[in-house]
Image (cartoon, rainbow, N blue to C red; front, side):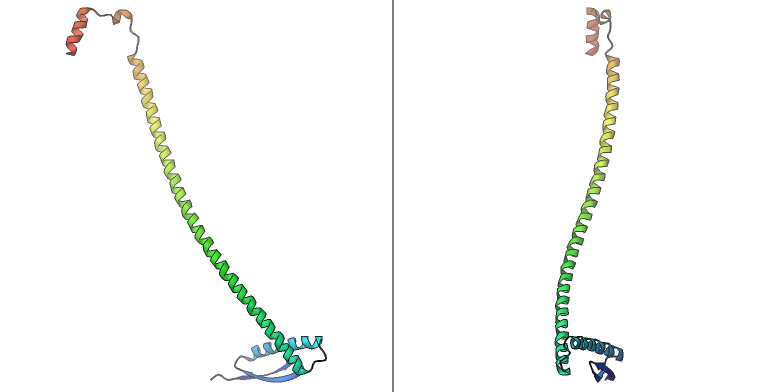
Length: 162
């Protein structure tokens, strides 16, 4: 069993002996808040007796506590909403990151494909240039007398082809 600590405190115009399990500093701080609240009410209503001051201070303290609890509930609700939004945003961010990665891979694929096609185009251009050179070499214009053949030469060519 914990020892109760007794602390002498002054609230309003009265001195009280308060016993509690909490440490004496905490009890003194709470009593100072109560004294401040009672003095505030007393300054606004100087004709109230000590019992009425205490009841009004209690009502005001409970009012403050209730408002703080409602504010806390509202803040907790807002926090949950913001946490859900944060999770949604993080989920969307991860999806976008994955999409970006996929797009980078696709871009790299198309860059490589372009290089392959550029190499093929260069190869085809080289083949084309070679073919042009071969065609030019084979299409030299021969003089007319070189193109004429006699029947005997013609027969020899036909016999060689057979």
